[in-house]
Length: 133
Image 1 (cartoon, one colour):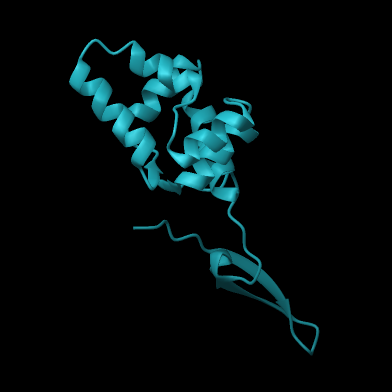
Image 2 (tube, one colour):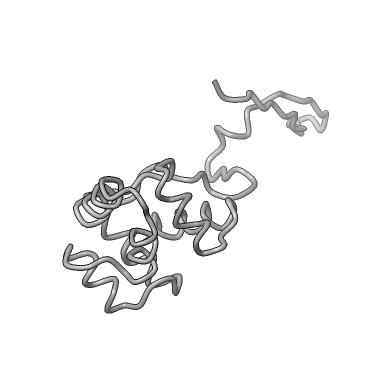
């Protein structure tokens, strides 16, 4: 449930007197909440691949190969190669190469972020960047 934010505004009447009224600023035309945009939970495969390249986390050539499903970017392949459980490595590879979309809450996002020394805020900003593409 959202937080109800009411405000008061002054109104100058035709006779010059002033009255006040309460209103909900979130319902006003052009309203934009303060702070960063919400973090989307899901982004498309294209947004993710392009975002990785735009953010400099992978090369453009890696992004193209990744979106085609032909190869993992080196940074991701290194993570998969470091997995000691062969089944988990296979599952991660299949997910990364075959997913149509990527979810912010998926555990592999955290693993990749840790490998890149990214903070939660940086991951959120990256997800917002991807969503804007």
